[in-house]
Amino acid sequence: TQLSICMPDTYGYQGNGNASSCLDIWSCLLACPPGDPSCADQCIDSASAFAQEVFSYVDQCAENANCQDMSCVYANCFIPIADCLAN
Image (cartoon, rainbow, N blue to C red; front, top):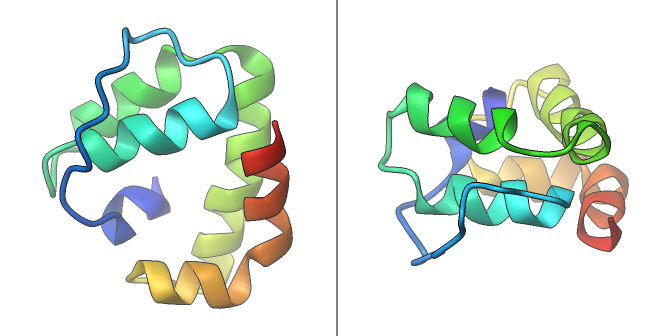
């Protein structure tokens, strides 16, 4: 995902691989080692369909804005991020 390029180093998420919300996906991605696309894929694949759909709006926004870091994502994707955090 585009967001996996932007995510900083781990924040210590101790999830169980069953992301039920967009926020769970976000937290899981934060725990992935930098540059590990298989970890990012697992975070997304383990989530519910609804969580994946909500997360996809943030990811698509980051891609459309050609973001390479989180400051770009935060600056350009406030509404999808807010939706993600609420769901």
